[in-house]
Length: 402
Picture 1 (cartoon, rainbow, N blue to C red):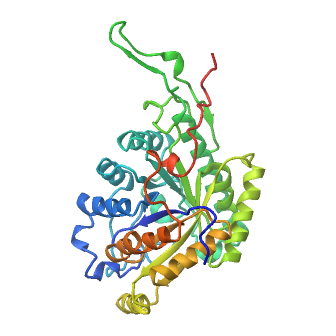
Picture 2 (picture 1 turned 180 degrees about the vertical axis):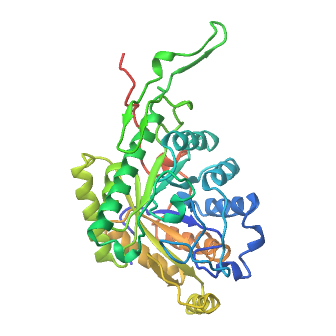
Picture 3 (picture 1 turned 60 degrees about the vertical axis):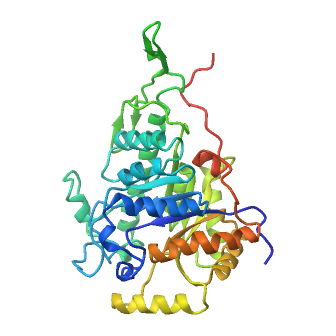
């Protein structure tokens, strides 16, 4: 195949031992280390070795489950996790170039806390922070907070009027949340801190701004207590499978992760997001659309399929995913990524089936293959995550022009 018209962006999604539920039983998995800082530092430095744009770190407010909407009671799969934002803050200073994007469930957390946490992450990473926002309608997660209740919600309820109303409400709330967070990031002007020992002036109070945000579920006065982040606006991203979440990506995010299963679907999804972007008044802004793929990568033809079969047998059922599942060689995956890239996706977020096996396969086999084709960078070309993604540092919405 010809090389892509423009180089692809690549990220990896990190989740425990890997995305296959039996991944922890593989020799490369190191399940005894999943709750150590060294384990996560190793994964992120490996991703940086492959010159990847960023890593995302999964999180939730309830135990992992084989069911998308409720607990499952299983004891043969990884259960329990560390907080994604705190992992990110631990590993970011150990890396120099790669973006670090923890997941935050916005349904039960406060915009003020998260704006401060991600701004802090941007400082400790010197401009490489982002956030992946996620909603939750799970009853068991709501019960941890006791502030609101949800009706029972199953996947098959999604298409019902009540299901659509619930989903729309959650994503509208997420859009408000992102807006409040973004305003808080701007609530200090870039030069609000004077730090002049001679005059005894540390701060110019006139350059701190109330944001006075009013949403349906919360109001936030501001300003933040953390000065404006190094990137101005850290990257906001979200996973989207349908029109309502596509609208969140188009109106509020810098990067959206989508799950097309072929080039035709990819083209249609990108087109829908671009239409929603124009409707949201962001037609001239760059919003990246990344395709999500679960990957089983092996150099030998057939080996990845065999490995997937072995893991399925350990799990007791065939592995399924919202995203396309790729099994094959690095060259075959490079072909697929280029084909999907030509359909309009600007990058990919790869989910390693077994982190200890498939992440090094991405960084040490797929990346060199893409580099040979002129489809991926050979060195980091920017010092911030916005820079890697080709996004300018935005002006502060509250800054007064002299």
